[in-house]
Length: 194
Image (cartoon, rainbow, N blue to C red; front, top):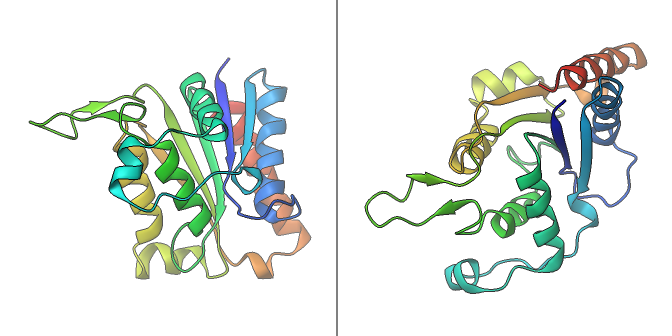
């Protein structure tokens, strides 16, 4: 049994988007296989935006973010669902990561090597990203720059490894059969906790 945290990164507080249906399919597969699942919806959280380095380093973490930090410490596998906006994650999701990945929670400052102490090691992650453009265009022409930044500069920086990606392109043109195929794939990945 694996402890899985599903992090819904769609900024909308409603649950009527493709990213929500994909997360539900993953969760159904995971629970059917006996994995323990928790969920966090970033669009439903109330937290302040960080506006300075001093705030990031020294300000108190609010209760909503503390609860998410506890869920991240609990999990063995994190699955993040979000739509690609302007080549990267939505601004609210980026603001969320700035709040969550604070010094002494996600990593420890070391004057000799600031990348040395990764406090979230021992966890894996999967990014499930929806987009309007074909996924191959984003991957090959744009080099998936926004997703790579999230993978490398946030998740791997604090210790998540491996971090795998699922890119779902052309979502505006998906018919019901194609959408069902994606739901089945996510259900299967959920059952395997990958």
